[in-house]
Length: 331
Image (cartoon, rainbow, N blue to C red):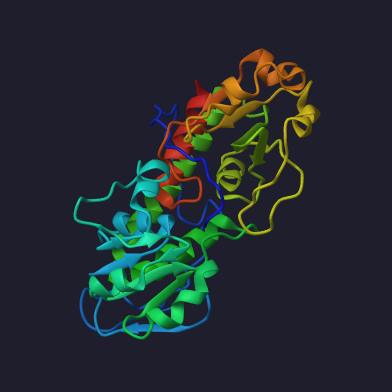
């Protein structure tokens, strides 16, 4: 995923209620893309990846190189620290809050242009990448098996995330850990939904945005209902204020300050990030008459996501985002 992201971590919140949820209850329990029988800690393992290819290994992968940050997080959550990661500095800024990297991990270049030589030098058992980086598959497969995950799916991002988790678990022999990881995520969804309902403010829509400054222009990206963050908000009972067009894959829209004028009189909670430290929503836009007249600006219902949680991440990042929504809506 190589859009200009501005994500961050959320501070864990004290949830108002704990409501255990069976795995079948949340509507997010579709089986993932791997072979169901791959549970052994040794011996041959296999899975079917997003491209429909069967990826087979003689034994579970231990030395894994990963070129996208969501999959880095997932691998660490399953108990497998990668030996190589693309753009470690970026991971630490945007995605590292949920699952920090060890100092032992080697940087293998940018996500969009990883170094084949650096990857080969690590002698990996497996390389994991997303479906928007297919050009690198052939040169990698000359010396290492490659797993291609989906990364995002606006139709059902939670089911997609589970499929990606299961693929990685299949090839690392971590299926039991994947079950535990997903069960904890399902419980967090239930707890968050209960806390938000108890808070009595779930009828207030949420507008989730990030943005960036390019010269004198400020671009704003709203997260639609089909984005991962939007799907999490919907699952816990919130209404997404952004109903405009999105990109069809990641669930991001595109607007500017004039586009925010539609919310002039709308009660809502703005959830935004500031990982670039350019403070668009508290400094750069202040003084613009359209922006200053927006109700959420005048009401002060603006909530900055703490840095480091990947809004395109895995279950652990999602749990941080859920904690943050509970903090906004249940406090």
